Length: 359
Ligand code: PMP
Image: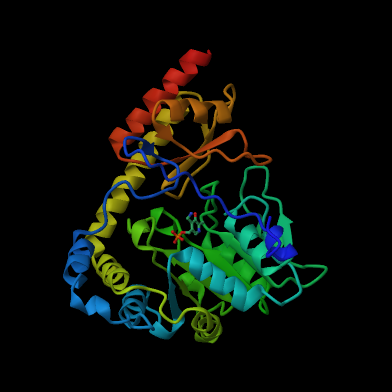
């Protein structure tokens, strides 16, 4: 607390991301990074871009990246707004679409916890909608409101549950709320769900958020973007440009474009991760874990007999980081990033040891 802080600043609770360890030997299965490196073409683009041109400001419209995203998804570059990681894109979206509305933003009670952090930062009231007993989102709960909301946001697949909603359900929610923006955060969509970008023509109120941190293995470069109607995108850009007209650096743009264009590497590396996810799910189930059906690069699992916080602490002592959330309804789950098959074996061996020890 400082006398220079406003009451608003004093009341903020900063978002705490998963631990980023300083010790390299730790096996990091706690923040859903990709276990393999980025496309070699992306690395080559970074090397090529590391030259005297770095003295110049980057293209403030990130034109090459917008064109690459537009080409990949069959939309117009004017529908794409890039940012420094999807967390920054989300900040601009919250600022442009939900702040100052004076009405609540609807979101599932269990979803990416950053949304609540931004609501606090931007003074946006929140209305939480409980997930169903099986941890899925119930579309009906987002229709017919007593009081009109400012908008809707959820992650699809949801985080940290990993469960995905189908496009029919997403369309049903969007059509049921035609006058408010509905943000679908698709950070993990490439690992097995369908993108709502396919619905944009029919549902102009949808705003899709993507990141290159997960399926493109570029978390260290901080690149994300939104895809929405031109009308909505122009509004978000107005806020973004008032804040920072150079969101992405030259190397990030070059790496992102190359990663998006390297379709073969993308599909091959996704397959390796999704195959490892299925094998990990089976291994965990054979140890007695209940694993929610994941469409992501992580699994969300609980054991009926062993306390999740204790297991997470035990794993850490064995050099493995996983994520535990001390939150209602999910505090008996572990969120485990899918690593290489070797990483998954190391995790399962460590978990068996924990279980045997506590048995
Ligand atoms: N959305 C979700 C659902 C996430 O899990 C994450 C990563 N923690 C992000 C957005 C932000 O990703 P980034 O800022 O790395 O693009």
